[in-house]
Amino acid sequence: MSLSIQELLENKGIPVKKDHFESLQVKWEGIQALRGSLEGVNIDDADISLKNIPGGDHIDE
Image 1 (tube, rainbow, N blue to C red):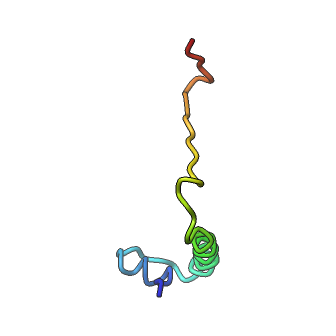
Image 2: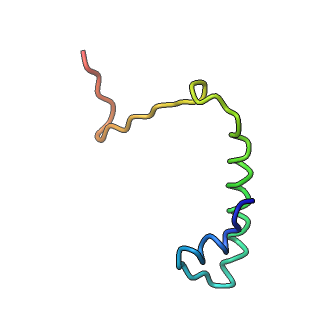
């Protein structure tokens, strides 16, 4: 069983205002739903590599 966002933040000592809790809960449920769809995925088929080069694209010849 996974922890709720409130339990997770309380365990880390992070205070949450009651008016922010509802939006955090909705985002947390969305994250958990996305995470659930990754169960059993072959990591070799799901890897992507991104490389950020400051200043634009550079081509090595």
